[in-house]
Amino acid sequence: MKKLFLLFTLFIICLLAACAEKSSVPKEQKNVEEIEKSSVSEEKENTEEIEKTEDINKDSSSLNTEEGEIQEKEAAAYVDALIQATVFQNAEKYAEKAPGPESSEEKQKDGSTQKGFFKEIYKQNTKQNMTGLPVTDEQVDKLADAFLKALSVTEYKVIEAKAQSADKIKVTLSVKGFDDSLVNNKTEAELTQFISENKVGKEELIAKNMEVLTKNYEEVKDTLEPVNVEVDVDHNPDGSYVVMFQDQYLKGFVR
Image (cartoon, rainbow, N blue to C red; front, side, top):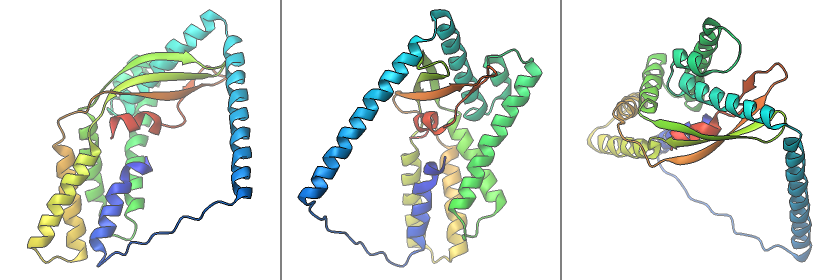
């Protein structure tokens, strides 16, 4: 999730800087030896990619039809449940959708863990990206709540799931996310106007930035056109499923 905060962090740094200098590094022309080295490297990468594809096809073919269909159905259900717990902060929906023999109470407990972890990661990333700036826990909490409120207007649906091997499934989603760039651009414009009309110190500037950004997330109402995103799901030996990289689906919800 760290990438979701880069624009915000860079903008604050620019506001606090008195001036900025642009520098450019001239491109150096590759000599013949470098070109040959690059060509060999590309050929090696292509060969490795072909071998990887062959391995995937081999692993996939080792699954019988029934096993493959079960894994695809359960992996899709798990991604659906995970999105409910994280993006929509709904542990009850997670329990309803999550596959597996666990009881409803156990699944809801897992959903609550995913829900809390997702929010906490957002808060920790925000604090980390604002290290050294006068930001309070209360400001970060309000920003996190506003960000989650913006996520709540988004929409998605599971399109398909395809077993790649005996323990890996790729799930494809269609997602209508919200325009995070628009939120940041709006915040930048409002702060620029505020600065032009007021003489403010560092602490007041940061407080105003948090206030405006929080407000703009709270006011998100519209979604963007749907895009397809693919999510890699691992099937563990104990029968459970896991998504190692939640950014794979988050990039569809926050654009």
